[in-house]
Image 1 (cartoon, rainbow, N blue to C red):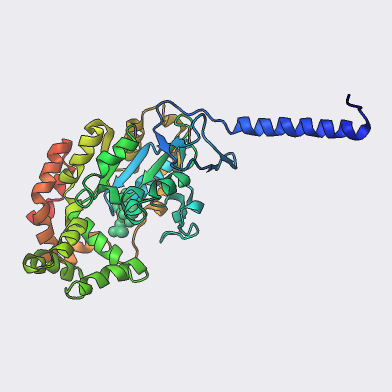
Image 2 (cartoon, protein in one colour):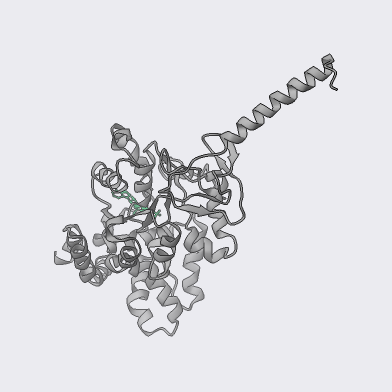
Amino acid sequence: MIVFTKPVLIAFVLGFVTLVIFHGKKNDNVRVISPSCDLFPLPYGNNFWDDAAGVSVKTHTEETHICGPRVLIVGAMKCGTNTIGHLLQKHPRIKINDCEKSGFDCNMTTFQGSKLGDLWEGNDYTIGRARHPDDWLKTWAERLPWTDGVSSISIDKSPSYFNTAKWPDIPRSINELLPNAKVIVTVCNPAERAFSLFHHYMDKNNTSSQLWRKRFVDNGFPNVQTFDDLTDILFFACQTSSNEDFCSTLRKEILQIGEYAIRLQPWYEAYGKENVLVVDMNEDNLQKTARILDLLGPSTLPPEEYPWEELDQEIEAATFKNLHYNGRSSAFHSYHASMTRLSQHYLLHNQELAQTLGENFPLDWNDEIKK
Ligand SMILES: Nc1ncnc2c1ncn2[C@@H]1O[C@H](COP(=O)(O)OS(=O)(=O)O)[C@@H](OP(=O)(O)O)[C@H]1O
């Protein structure tokens, strides 16, 4: 028989209160996920961090899965992928990957002062998988914010995914994991894109840039100092070089990403054309955003919840503009021969893109060489 002395009573009450709190917390952690959510496997059944709740949680019934990204911004690199990400993340229902756990420096700022950590790049399926074949998926899943697919969704911006020349199987294999995702591709004049990419790599403050330049010398090519040096290697030296491995990799990253119609094909095949939105980088931000929200549908990203009035004030700082060169509009003037050569290479590709999209803007990219 229990004797209800004062200490026993206090212990009893404390125990009861602890039980209630513990039970309440446990219930808090059981979330309901939308059936339309692509359940994303956490191979080792980890906990993950829920920013909003400020707690480590496990998913609803299956502790080994969380809701995968619903939007994939796959490229093209240097065609405004950051802008698309920033336009999207202004929607209150979008949650961004957890920068703190990404291994990136979250305090690093873009050239114009906006926080890079707001939207860092995972590239998990491509670079992550190649570097960490055993635990890339776990690492990706751990960084995803908790979303339920209804009140919140997550996005992934990884421009390397559009390099289907290098990774032809990426769209199909991502689709196996995320069949309900929508795909966004932003495109721009491909010759100017190559020019912009060159300056991205030539930025001397960047360690990966130094490694990029070193690759040329290591592979028996001249040191690359100017854009002409690069196009000479692409269009001439590589024609006669026996180093096909290097030349093939170079063509893929500089030239072939800009052959948009070809690069798009595997995405269309994997996801269906209706789930892949191609936007023109130069399109007005308001129109661009409206088209993206439309792709996701009003029940996923209601347009009335979007802060439209903030669009033009803030987005300028998030374009990731490279202020260390004169900009891509200077390309034709400064490197006329190289840009003409590149534009000729893309002439038919641009026509094919225009045909595929049923839009005229890619034909404008051919105007420079007609001048
Ligand atoms: N709306 C709009 N209009 C015109 N130009 C724009 C726009 N948004 C982004 N940009 C330019 O796109 C370049 C950055 O592209 P990304 O964000 O894809 O960069 S990255 O691939 O993630 O490195 C970067 O180009 P560069 O300055 O040549 O580097 C930006 O200036």
